[in-house]
Length: 108
Image (cartoon, rainbow, N blue to C red):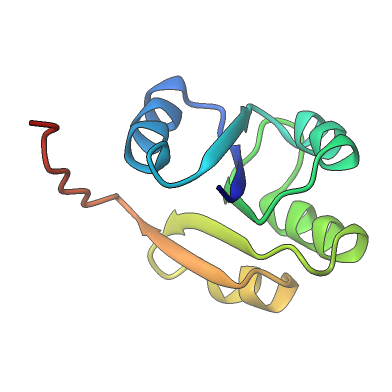
């Protein structure tokens, strides 16, 4: 199963995303850039999903640094509509607009 690193400081948002993706991916969650870089040095990830606003680093700077250090890992950034162009220029592969519109089938 592929591994994803989720970088999100909101417990509510993180738990929502974890509930959606946990059946498809092994997910590690950290609340800030510092924690993300610590995990990236120890583990191999197939995807990074991050908020554009981080507790300890600007999202654009985070994307640039991840791209510099780990050029092969795809980066998806969730941000408010109209804010994604600079993140793509910084090296993000995908922009996911907020607010989320997640429709989840209940487990039955």
